[in-house]
Amino acid sequence: MKKTLAALAAAMTLAAQAADIRLVVDADQPGPVIHRNIYGQFAEHLGTGIYEGMWVGPESRIPNVRGWRKDVVAALKDLKVPLVRWPGGCFADEYHWREGIGPRSKRPVKVNTTWGGVAENNAVGTHEFFDLAEQLGAEAYVNGNLGTGSPQEMAEWLEYMTAEGHSTLAELRRRNGRDKPFRVHYFAVGNEAWGCGGNMRPEHYIDLYRQVATFLKTPENNRPLFIASGGNDQQTHWTEALSKGIQWNFDAINHHYYTFPSGKWEGKGSAVGFPEAEWISTLANTVKVDETITKNIAILDRNDPKKHLGLYMDEWGSWYDPEPGSNPGFLVQRNTLRDALLAALHFHVFHAHADRVRMTNIAQMVNVLQAMILTTKDQLALTPTYHAFKLYTPFQDATSLPARVENNPVYKVGATEMPELSATAARGKDGKLYIGLVNANANQPAELTLQVGASAPKSVHGQLLTAAAMDAQNEIGKPAQVTPLPFDARAVDGRLTLRLPAKSIVVVAVEG
Image (cartoon, rainbow, N blue to C red; front, side, top):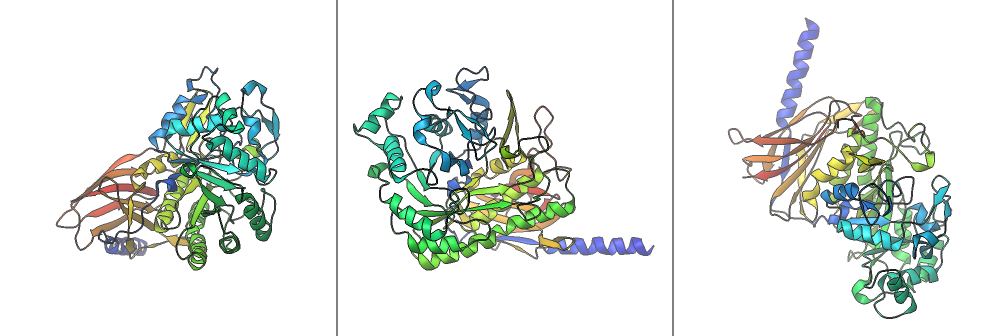
């Protein structure tokens, strides 16, 4: 009897708490525009991320357009992919662009010493990459080789891609099949200079950047934004040094942030079959990206008060122990509902810092790390992360709005705790008010009332993403376990209540 009364009391307490939770959106206080490139993608020469995953070659029986799989390109176009980063990553600092032009049959075969020690036949080079970007309608982010390259090599690559006249390099591009210059939107000088890009100190990298940047010249109408290689994880000293030490051809600093269940590089944790303790540790480590971004932006605000420089999170996402039986250098991992929530929580943080965070790139598009798509031969599966990205497409180029969750419950498992609910809001380009919500609690649903300004809206309409299991996934050749469902709510007696299932994402448009 006592246990029954205790359970009833706990339920009544939970109901009372839920009734007090409010999402308040200040629709009359517009903030920065959420740049569409916050939803950027990343394709590296790594495992089957490009070869087999996207590129099958023009001669393949798998339907393709000039070598790129039709089904993969179509799925990515549905995401409205705004930007693609290429060729790396760590691979970028071993990539020599001249080896990836001209007839594919004559291109040299190298060893990909960074990722798996496999053969790299250079079938995908500059022309193929830009063909992919143009098929997707996406902007191009090219990562230059600082680690094993030279200022001359980078300068000549930019000339090859952008020259309009009749220089030798422009004519070489034309002989290779491209008359008009390629449009280069972003260009990075090296990658992870602190690690795989050369194990440099910031001071050494700054001197190299200043040297290289002197020679990075393009026609004014095709000048990319130039990106310096910044820090990772919780670091701030790279942002401090670069924002003071680089003077020209300098538009942004990148920063990398990967999330592991354990919070450690060694023994990261499993992608599937994990306990709730690893569910919450992963999501709790995810939201720490807000602290990282806040600290780095504070440095930029001090050293760059006019806000010329962007902070680009051009590698982010989940990283687990390798899939058993796979090549560890291929970074193969399962993609589950947990990854979808991880992605949505990142979006909310990026939106909150939209004045400086103007571009991010999840790692990666296909078959690698937190991929959008998994492929094998002529089949594919859309991952939970894919569906999270699709739910949030209305936020591309939307105007951010302040949103706060009042009386937000604490979600706690063991010694780990985090806010149960996360929210973001924006005015879309179509004029509609959009709201994104995450319920991180793996077991308990949540109820909250929605208030826009001083009033409650009449209704909301959108989609919900959830599943029965924490590690639910969409596997090739099997029925999908994680797919969007309709979500609607209407006001009753002037009160609009949103009921969020446990472990869920909801994105809605507000009406009335």
